[in-house]
Length: 82
Image (cartoon, rainbow, N blue to C red; front, side, top):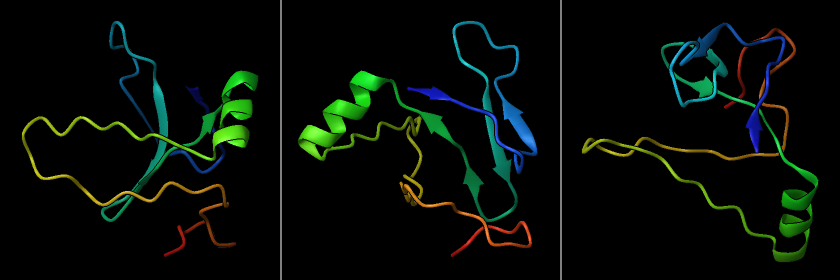
């Protein structure tokens, strides 16, 4: 699975950080949205199992709300949906 660029992205996290893939994202004061491309094997695994694991690093801080989705997360005017 790799993060991929998208037209609404307005920031790239870890652009030149060794050992980390750059993470294109749309970010504002409320939300950060990223887009990921699955490999064919990952797609088959999800089709077969219906399972998605989500791993986050919180570095000892409170966990933030998450919302994995397969739906386009932006409204027509470019703002994110609820």
